[in-house]
Image 1 (cartoon, helix red, strand yellow):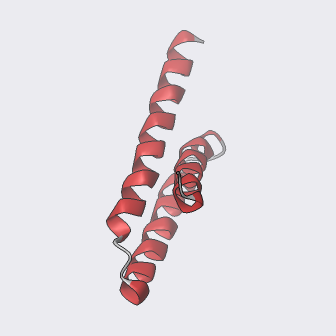
Image 2: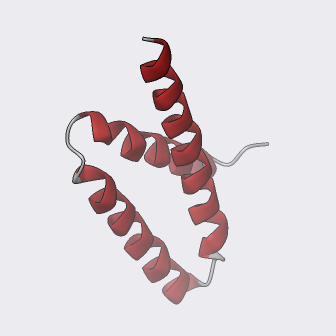
Length: 74
């Protein structure tokens, strides 16, 4: 069974990658905000934030690859 928090991390990674279409500065801002949130959460509840960050980055990478392919064939 998939956890809803995992789905949220995948969605956040995709939104961060798609935000490039609005303005490039939104991408590093989105990543920094997510990383600060995860490090703070790990500090307080020790929930192994690296798993959450990995889910975020997987979605980010896949979305970026999709955007690159879309631009190449468009």
